Amino acid sequence: MYSTVGDLFRWNEALFGGRVVNAESFKAATTPVELPANVDGMKYGYGLVMFEVKRLPAIGHGGGLNGWSSDLVRLPGQHCTVVVLANALPPGPGLAPGEISRAIAGKLLADEIQKLPPMTEDTSVNPKGFIDYAGRFDYQGAIMTVSVEGDALFSQLTGQEKFRIFPKAKDEFFWKVTDAQVVFLRDEKGKVNAARHTQNGNAFRAPRLADDAVKLTPGQLDVFVGQYQYGPGAVMTIKRDGDQLLAQLTGQPAYPIFPKSATEFEWRVVAAKVEFVKAKDGKITKAVHHQNGTTIDAPKIK
Image (cartoon, rainbow, N blue to C red; front, top):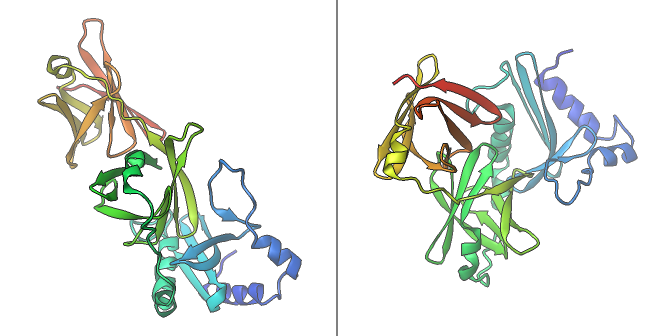
């Protein structure tokens, strides 16, 4: 089975025009299934996903199979359909059909989006409470670092600039540079233990990462200094700068790594950790790297 942009446009016209399913079935398809209170995810009905494009309600779905990918979006309030078809799966950087369809919709409907009331800052939120949110959150492989500067709260995602976020209400903040919001979640004791990030109508939960690093002496750190073979053409170089270890993979910047135990270290710019394995004589023989569910055995080569 194959399709074209024109075919999918005609399909959307028929579906949203009431010519494919009856009103009851259409309502079920476009009503998000209620998830448990502690579960975050997309707003999914029956075969359709509900989300937002620049705060405009949208309905659609993506797809992909054997080197092909697609995205079909309908903005019912504007009677607008966007279709993107690509001959790549996985897509190249910045070429995911879902990203392109939302960018196109944002351009097409820029005038209507400009008319939307702006997100307003709640100035009654006491900035003295911002310290509760400071820390690191696991953003599905990247790290979101939240920090306090004066009376302002800032966020920085791995590899991106630092941006200020503004209070919408207690524990709720939004970005002005992009259409995204974050709600800081608290445990039964009132301590922030996670963040719920919402963007383009989709949400995910980001657990807070612990910051309790172990202290090791420069002499203890020197044991790990050297080079580790991560694969063909990829070497991880470990150096010590004062009481700080730095890890640098071929072609990448050097990043500090922090001890979690006498032999285990973690990155704070990305959700990754490395464990150094010692032989009976105390010398390091290899590093075991854990990231995104993948484990790499990296023998020490120097």
